[in-house]
Length: 210
Ligand code: TMP
Ligand code: MG
Image (cartoon, rainbow, N blue to C red; front, side, top):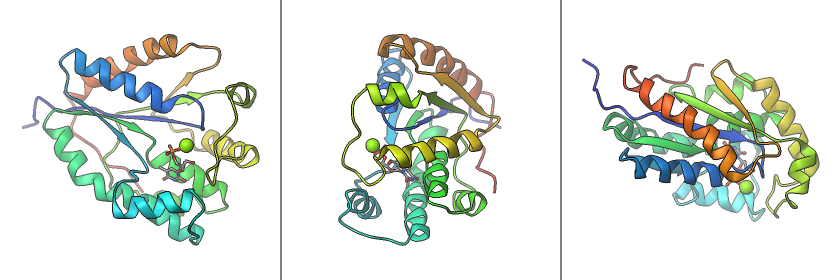
């Protein structure tokens, strides 16, 4: 019998500066206030041993082969997988700031094969909802410059944008962040999240396919 209490696995994806972190945090606050257990998770999770290597890599203090670092990003998800499953099955909704699709888009933007990139994540918990936040390059530029990290360069971000659009999956919900205030976008996302939380109750948790 299926547990009647399963939480939903909700992922926010999109290019840099689109507002994923802000929106994810607000969604967790919203769910929590309404009495629905919810937890925010970020990928990469920079707090683990693997995450510290990734943090060094992103801050350009450490070099890795592109394949090797892809597998580290994937391993950083795998090391969270069993606790994610436990939380979901005990009724906690997880809101993820990036997940597997970021891994595929960023690594393939460096020239790695899509399917090769996808394979290392096969078997991870399957999102119930992927909210892909879309923003034009012009507006993202207008929101302020990128930071200092490895991938925060306009040319590379344009390639990532292109990979995300090739990756676009049937199960994505694309939401435009164009010309919207934080509150307006949040309002739209809440409706989608409420529906996903409700429908997850009647579904068993899936796993990412190869
Ligand atoms: P953050 O800015 O959301 O902390 O993410 C750090 C960077 O890591 C961001 O540029 C996207 C990149 N990234 C990957 O290259 N592969 C991955 O699997 C993930 C989750 C993020
Ligand atoms: Mg960033």
